Amino acid sequence: MQLSWGVTGLLSGYIVLASAFSMQAGEFHATSTGSPKGNGSATEPWDLGTALVASEIVKPGDTVWIHAGTYRGGFVSRLSGRPGHPVVVRGERSGRVTIDTHPRDEKDDGQFLLLGADAVYRDFEVTCSHPQRETKIAGPWPADIRRGDVDVRGDRIAVVNLVVHDCGSGFGFWAEGEGGEISGCLIYNNGWRGPDRGHGHAIYAQNACGTKRIVDNVVFHQFAYGIHVYGSEKASLKGFEIDGNIAFENGCLTREGDNAPGILVGGGSPVERIAVRDNVIVGGTVRLGYPWGTTNEDVVCTGNYSEGLVVRDFRKGTVRNNTLVASSTVVSLEGADRLLLGGLHWNENDYYVTDGRWGECSVVESSKSCGLSFIEWREKTGLDARSTFTKGSPSKLRVIVRPNAYEPGRAHVAVLNPQKLSEVEVDLSPVLKSGQRFRIVSVKDVFGESLVSGLYDDRPVRVPMKPIKPPPPIGMPNAELPVTEPQFAAFVVLPE
Image (cartoon, rainbow, N blue to C red; front, side, top):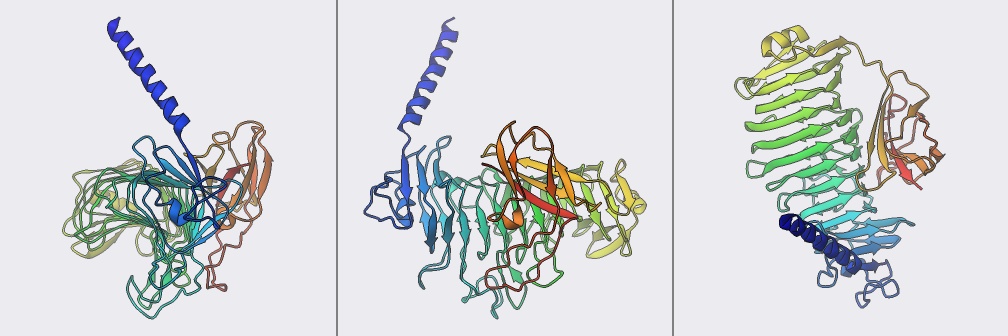
């Protein structure tokens, strides 16, 4: 009984402390007309630059509200909470909050730099209004392209439900910070054209400690890759969960018809503890292992829909329950020398090949590529004994709903519509409550008019699959962007 009472007393103590902590949590305010001389109150707000470095005043559990308006230039945040009690920096609910990373002067690099630790940044827009999108200078750091990005270098930083577009890259998610999360964001039109190639990924990531989570984002129309976990032999690429993302037509802004991988994981150093699960990739592939990289440790690749898969040199790997579609070479297994097969558990996948003139599958050993039929692939590799192969395209409608982890009533929806139906039914019962007011917008027009709105009545919601004109890149008003509807569309469900 003493032990039982001791545990009860301990739990009661935690509840009292948690309640006291919650009661003490403060709210502070930043506005576009605020001042460093303010005190952060609603009547005497800070400017944004002051609010983000007020680490002596803003404590674990506190919230900094960014009010509607545009905040131009680069900013550095040094706010820190503690594990389980983060500081929250949040755009106000009733207005559009925009950070414009257009540099203010020659000393301003335009970065939205997140240092500190245990903080959540959510519900605002990050963009760059500078019109220059092309340079004659090759490489990743041309002097005449200064667009900024969201640069995450603190420990256990969560970036949630942001709209990030037209920056140099969307996010840098770097190994200086332990763990962290990018969740529920819309990321598009980032990068620029160089004489060598397109530059600018949606998310460029490295990690050394803990696990970084890249979850439930929608990434499209970058100049380069979608999700790019990459680095040289000096970089660390350990510990990533890449789950539930929707990526389409990345790389299309470099040249008409170009596509870059929706997800690439690999580089000059070994990758390990990698999970790639339940992602939807259209107009791009998933590549695990870099073409000129080293031998990698372990990966899990399950439940994805992608237009092709390449896996290179993993000691251990699980590849299951994926749906892979391509005109030719739907799947490829590569080895710098001989194929690494002993640690692979690879089965129960569904493959679709519409053409196959270059082979249905392939293997690469010692830089020599060999196209194979699916039967030959099974014989050569010993993989996919219980997988299926179809000569042709998928014919069934697929509707994928991903509820938002941070906001009840919010979700991303991906629709794969091979029958070209003019509208589809979407079951939103995992997202909405009966009688809840909601609206649905296209990810291509997130600030625009609703496609559907009303009160949820427990029945499937009919969503139109009509073509939506995507936002042109800033500085490129005449850019030709791919039309994916009605075969494919992505939406955001929002509570009202």
